[in-house]
Image 1 (spheres, rainbow, N blue to C red):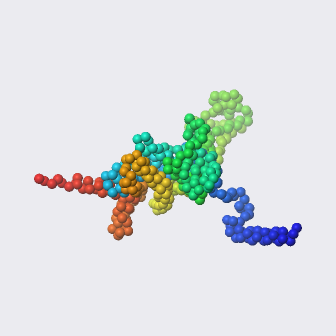
Image 2: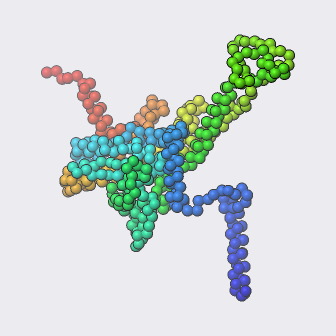
Image 3: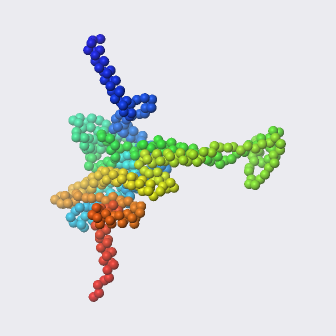
Length: 446
């Protein structure tokens, strides 16, 4: 071996030793037996694609078959959607704005619960915007698997299709490849996917890693624990049922029935227990009862600890997941609600509004312009819109109202913001107040 090769090998060894010392100085990058069996995620975007389908199928089963899975999906759906969103068109003509608001809310709000359930359960929701022959717009929910996840190819010049989603050279989504029917549908036939422009598909998902193109079920962190917890609960129920079946065993050294009588089944006599009965057994006879293990209280507390872990992994409080308020006090419940609402408001703003409502409004207005229902020269007046999400119920309505009044009076909060936090449109509220005021005023005498 040449001297150069020997030197190079020595340098590599020194570098390796130096890196080993550096990684050991940070526990998360070190080795040892404690890290054995721990599986890292080297490529998050590829791992989410690989895990997406099994996680979706297991989450669907958990949402349908387990109390915890169903509760997680429904709690998130109710808190993200609530009673629906209000649109506030910024069109200068208020009558036109009211008409647009009402028409858009009638289109979008009925689609929100199904979309939110798919978002939580499957990790992503697809809604197709369908333009009807009369120029109106309809929404069609697409199952996640109807987007052909098996379609991945290089189109050249930087363009590519990843899991059924087509990107251009600048990494912008330009199209979705949609199968005619979802796999497993009644009339599903295998055929080539149809290319649908991205402007006609609303894809809503929470991006966890850069480069991620498909969503991952929100139940993924807790799916295995939900399954184990559900099986443990069933086993505990069967144990309790078995323990309630008290069985007695009679021993008679003379081979008789120890003075008991009852219907015979083969060579055995079936004896039932009667309340208040007393029996004197002959000498040499004995009765023993089965003694099932008694660990119910410890098992129940263990299941509660599992519920706490499931709730934490699902982003809920223990009380939200179980409905059990026995251990909650006012302060802890309020702190839990504040933390949950902070995350829910983030998802409402970033997912429901930014990825569903606003793109839908833009496409809806564009269709109206193309159909001639809106003059093209006035299209700009129709594009600006604001959305008001569902308000939150107040824990202490009187104290919260007084606090808002104080903030408004001190100039730290606007009245419009306070009304919006309650899920109301301030223009509609002012009109209702004015109408009530006019109705309360006595009619002027002639």
